[in-house]
Every structure is written in C-alpha cells, then in structure tokens.
Length: 178
Image (cartoon, rainbow, N blue to C red):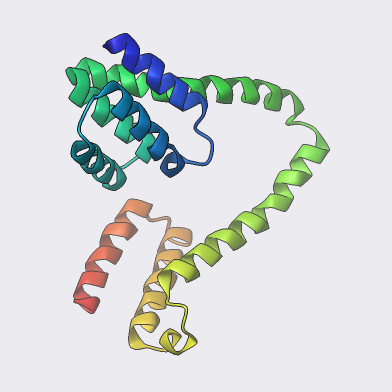
C-alpha cells in the first residue's frame, strides 16, 4: 500500500502543472481507481485541504495517505507529491545560478517587478471590491482603504511584523464591519 501511495503521488507530482486545483481531478481519478476512500470522503478531504495552510494538492495527498494507511501513509504520500517538484527546482536552480550574474538576467528580473506588482494590485482591487463602480464609494470601501494604508505604513515605516498587522487588521475589521 505504501509503495502504491508513493508511486501514485509521485506520478501526480511530476504532472502538477497549472497549480493544485488543476490536480484535483487527477487525484480524484487515482483515489477512485485505488478505492482509497469514498467520493464523499474525497470531497471532504479536498474541502479540508483547501482551508488548511499550504498547497491544496499536497494537503489532499496527505489526507488521502492518512486515510489509506495512517501516519506513514500520509508521510509517504506527501513525499511522493513534493519530491518531483523539489528535484525539478534543484535542477533549474543549478542552471539559474550559473547565469544569474548575467546582465540580461538581472535586467529581465528588474523588468518583471512592475508586472508582478501590477498583478498583485489588480488582484487586490478585483477581489477586494465589487465590479460595480457605484459600490466603490461606500463607507466600507473607505475603511478598507484606510486599513490597507495603515498596514502599509506600519510595515514599511515602523517595520511591524506582517503577522501582527494581519491579526490587528482582522480585529479592526471585526469591530468595524460586524
């Protein structure tokens, strides 16, 4: 059983392009093929993996391994899932380290910074506010922007730890929006 868990999740780990959510149908197919758990338990495992910290596909693999063969099954499934990515990253990083000193590589990464920043800002606006422009002018939006600005100031200027700002922002959000 342990060998089957390892091989199955290693195979999935090798093919894990497109992110964890893209792997869920593949994991489901393997679970059904090996009859490691019922469809209902699989759905519950995916839901639990989605709310737990970390990558959903790896969390799902861990839960399936645990259900199939206990703690050892969870460990073997997790190793099988992450080992291919680890090996690929190590190989790529060894080549990258050799070309990192290149001026072209430095300027490319410097040029990517504003793109990544723009995408993050877009995601924050897109998920933080509704699509309607009318909804952008409410007291909730004003307080959301004030909280975000406050977080920026205390993290940037006063060097507060991000976890502290997350906890305080959550408390402020509960107090204001409840």
